[in-house]
Length: 112
Image 1 (cartoon, rainbow, N blue to C red):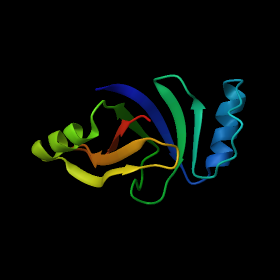
Image 2 (cartoon, rainbow, N blue to C red):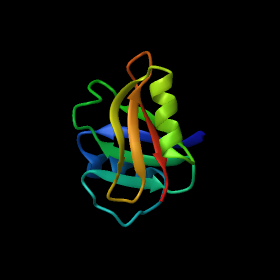
Image 3 (cartoon, rainbow, N blue to C red):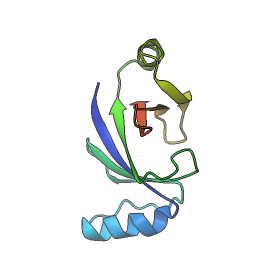
């Protein structure tokens, strides 16, 4: 397992993505209102729409795993609160989310 991504959470993905694209002098060619990858090399920088399960947070981390079934079993074994079980995303990754002891969202992901 390794740090694969820093994800900024916002209610306005296009606005925040435009800021980081300008700041980093890059263009991802996307106007997706839900999810945008600003820096594609790991650790990645992404912007994700806050849909309420992360109330009060503006950042989360994503850890890349090789085997999602093994990672999911491990998370359950250590008693972490699973927010969302593993599921395939439109961009091809399989993600799950859990809360750390302070309530922060941590994503585990298996890349396509």
